[in-house]
Length: 68
Image 1 (cartoon, rainbow, N blue to C red):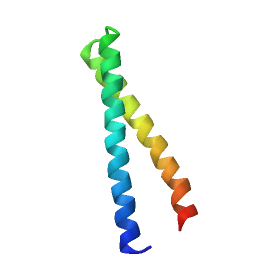
Image 2 (cartoon, rainbow, N blue to C red):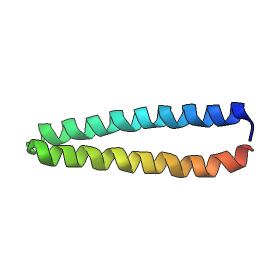
Image 3 (cartoon, one colour):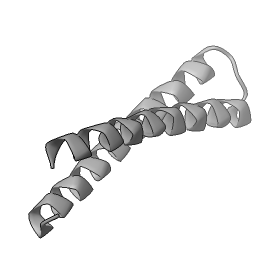
Image 4 (cartoon, rainbow, N blue to C red):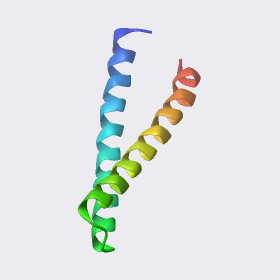
């Protein structure tokens, strides 16, 4: 893999982590609006973050070998 491909992969990971963080914040806000206490809302938001990040990593694991 060339340096340009590695930097592109790193940029994709950072972008997908930012999208996952936004999804986690949305999950937190939905839990708070639903009346959950802060500690439970943080747990739900982190669950959403890690679920979305896992989905993105699995997607990259399929796409990267197909593109190289």
